[in-house]
Length: 319
Image 1: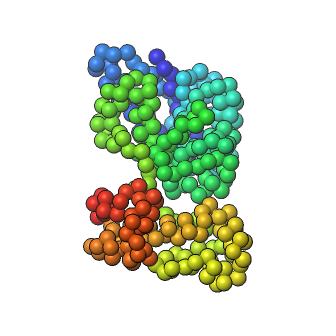
Image 2: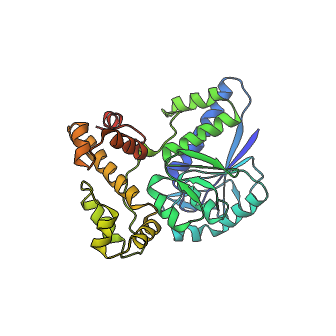
Image 3: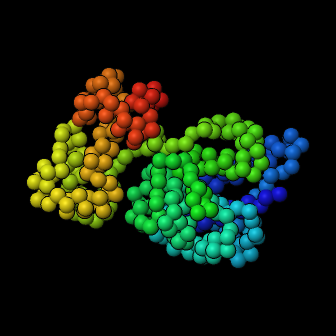
């Protein structure tokens, strides 16, 4: 029987932890009903005997404490706040994760639990998935990690990472299939009403341009692009308007936002198109023209690139 241990940090997201724990418990219950061997045993571990969560409304008492956490076939870090204060409060657990991974221990994270893995240094140079809302903050704090907010989950360097709540559930389903069988995983997907084959977070993402980068010369450029997204604005025009050379503007813009000027402009336009598709009855052609596109194929391709769906499919899902 496999041993799975949740490494529970202070400030853990209780819903994220319980969702994952209940998914694994449901798999065991199903296997028992089918007179099949139990696939795994699940326990909770932490650095303190009392782990606070839910703004102090709840307290978790883990089964195991540092340094006496048992050997496991997989250690899972549930979601938590990736703030400097939270990372400082969980320094002991982060250090334990780094040491354990160096010994070859398999590790996974759910949603922003990846911040603890990044703080431990074990994601440096690797691909890692995080919630789309945290992407820019994660890129700023942990620039050596190759962050992605489009996939629901990824596996690189022996480490599983996943996106938001439903994406984290997909990782749990994957682990259930890996440690038992596909039938058990599909059963659990049906119980929790999850889309077993969903691979992308893009249809759920909302683009808000990152402005906490500290470059006061780039923030006005971003605001200008956001106000004039429907207009044809070239880099040369931006250089003239904001008194910067092209190479300087492009370099500083990418450093500050993580994107080129064109990519930023495309994402603003797609976000505006999404709002119109959700809230109005305008035709897709009118939406296309309204956000600054004249070529239907270019609009569809760009929309799909950043939303994961065609404009029509997006409207059908969200209107």
